[in-house]
Image 1 (tube, rainbow, N blue to C red):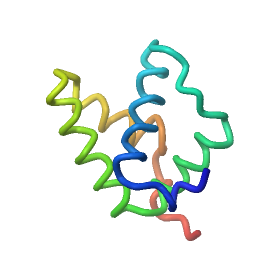
Image 2 (image 1 turned 135 degrees about the horizontal axis):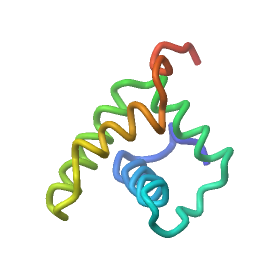
Image 3 (image 1 turned 180 degrees about the vertical axis):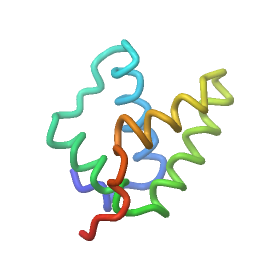
Image 4 (image 1 turned 60 degrees about the horizontal axis):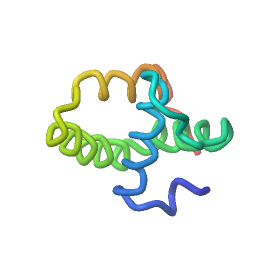
Length: 88
């Protein structure tokens, strides 16, 4: 999987799966290396991250999910602090 090759909708699907798994849901099916590649990509590409987050929050709002928790999870737990300034 190359995150740069994924559409925003595909990124949202992967993020939602990983988020649900981290919050006690079913396994996302992402290997650790795939999770790390996705987190690294989103940490280095702010525009892609912002677009994916926007689309994901729209989906979560429509489903009655917690958009604030999802944003926190993405920024702090998934990508991690300080990750957004790395060069590729």
